[in-house]
Length: 177
Image 1 (cartoon, rainbow, N blue to C red):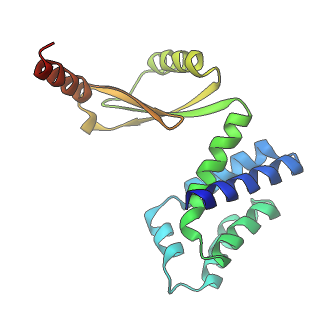
Image 2 (cartoon, helix red, strand yellow):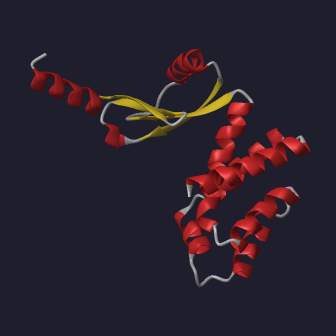
């Protein structure tokens, strides 16, 4: 499954390079991913008894006015090959690779309460220094975090939550340090 995801993401990236539409395709890929990344839509696309024509109609209605031919072709191909479950993962991989190619990286900061602009900019500055890339930050509030925050960036997690600090403290106490 991972090889297929990589293969499709690479093919999309090569098409974008050939067409000279990296920036535009990146924006479109984010829009498609965000639109399709909904449990009801995904269940509809993955359902074996929904005919391909209905899935094509969904894509046509939602995207035909907005997307270039090669991205519509990608969506239709995924349906024809019964790989609807891979659409969002492929687009996510494509977005990550395109961002890296353009010197950007996405970070998601999850905190117990809303962060101020000053806090977000402070986090961005540190991440820019660590990654040497332009960092786009998405914030999310999760009351389950209790306190602190964690950052998801480039497949890594930086956890500065109260829960993780307490777990680390417990482990140090168990070891006698």
